[in-house]
Image (cartoon, rainbow, N blue to C red; front, side, top):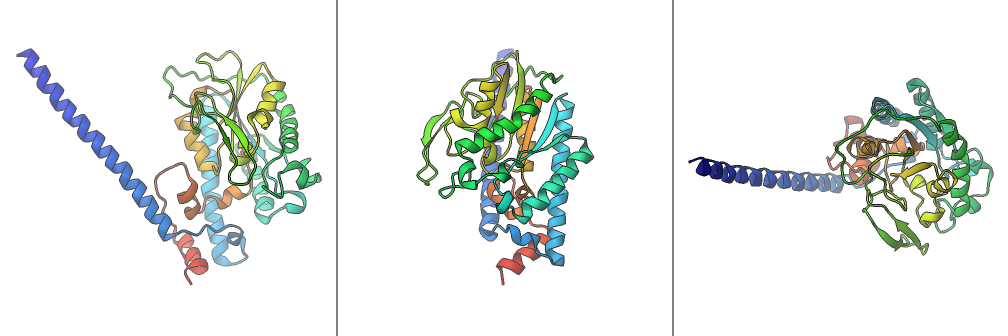
Length: 327
């Protein structure tokens, strides 16, 4: 009788599991379809026009600033809860003669938020702003960093890493996800982005852009880098990216590069909570720029966010969209 009961329970449980699995799959498909529908309805992604000097634009930008600050606060709380040190660095090729309004305003805002949250803030663009963009970037083919630009960034980060060289986090995890980053794990391929700039991308088993795997037991200070393409270093081989240059300079530490194309502050929060924190970093260096505020606009998030949940526009965002793109 016991065997029959267990068998019946197993069969019933199996049916329930299959039903739950099917339901979960259906939910994922529905979410994906809904997000695609929202993208199709709102295909345009505004940038600097959000900064126009009118009442509606100002209202939209104020909403985006509030969203950004809330997400940054959430990241600060999560990192601090693990006993780690959060550091904010500002980095963008849009400096000097190429300075945009969004980066000028954005840097002031982020620096102010960092002060309010008692998070160290460092501007990594001061030296870059004095140099020829054709030297530190790959202009005219692409505006991302050149080998020289990556070298300068590593040099600017060096004193920061030294300053926090003794910081140790207090959190350890017994259960961890398979990956700490969002890149394809254990990948080694040549890409060029369609720009005739071939580069070799290598990832470790944990989906991070680094040549070595993160060991299960931490024996060295771990520094986690989070950011968008400015810290991902597209069009450069692994050996030439800033984090690998730092790894060579600091063999007593582990440099974990979790940066990814198109990411913004909400992506850093979800990535840290879902994956990156389980690498048990001691220091988290977050790289941001002023365009991150514009990235919070709903149509941008629906196109590039790692979160698959679609976002509906606020009334101000919808009115702004209609004014600019649905005349």
